[in-house]
Image 1 (cartoon, rainbow, N blue to C red):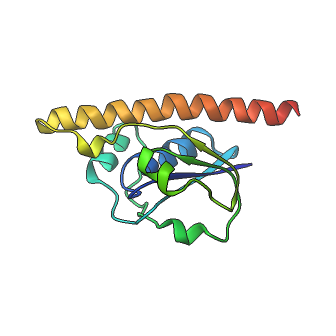
Image 2: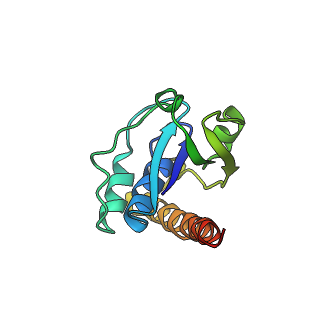
Length: 143
């Protein structure tokens, strides 16, 4: 099983959605975790847009990178530019990659416009991370 850690600055939106999506979409194949440079709280809008897909992340909590310092991962993937700058290395990961996505928590406008941005980021995470991890799994099978 591929073990992946998603990293963001606050572990509030993107990394939380990525953890939920990948654990839902790749059961028994990929085990996803998430952390932030600093822990805050899971954004309620992230919980809401994930629930729209039938994925419950309400039980997830925001975690600090420090919680994972003694664990090993096949991949650590930074999802925001700030985390990439603050975590250029993660000693427990065999590989560290960056796949940047916009921060939906920075969206402005009406509540519906903000939720639309959360949905756009959620869907981009699912599509891009899912395709990448499927390639990783295929390559591991072929090896």
